[in-house]
Image 1 (tube, one colour):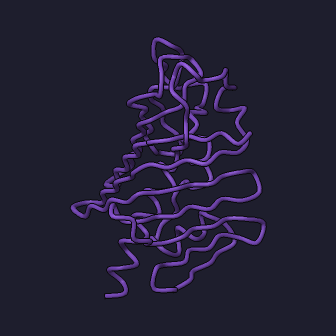
Image 2: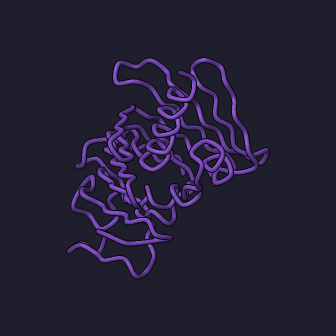
Image 3: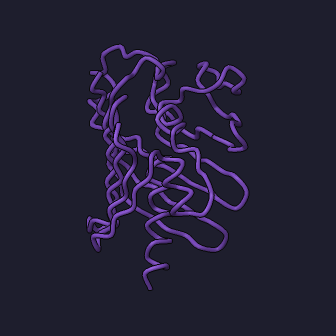
Length: 192
C-alpha cells in the first residue's frame, strides 16, 4: 500500500515540478511589458498537471513558488486535498507526503533517484516552465520556443498566454521513454 501511494506521490511530484507554472495574471489588455523568461528570477505559479508512466496515470493541482534560493511545490487532488509538499533550498531537497512521511536528499536529482529509481531533470524545470530554451529550439512565428530536446527529454510548448513574443507558456508537454507529463498553467504571478 505504502509503495503504491509513494509511486503516486512520486509521479505527481514529477508532474508538478515539470509543469509548475501558473500564477495570477491581469487581463491581457492590462499586462505590463515583461522581461523574457530568462530574465525572470522569482515567480509563483498554479495549474494542473497529469503524468503518465506506461499505463499508470496521475493528475494533480499544483502551486509552485520559485526563486534562486528556494522552491516550494504543493500538490493537491482536483478537489483540493493535499497530497505532498516538495521543498528545495541550500539544505537539500525534501518531500513530505500527506501521511507525514519525509524523504530527503542533497538535491532534486538525488531525491528523484531515491523516489523513482532514476534521475529526473528537476533542476532544469525552473527554466523550462519559463520557456527559457536552448538556442537550438525550434521557434514559433512570434520567436518563442515551440519544441526542443535536452538531456534526452522532449519539451513542447502547446500554448502561450498571449501572442506577444515575451508571453509565458500555458501548456507544456515533456516526454522521455514511457514518461509523459502535461502541464496546464492557469495563472502566473511574477515576483521579480
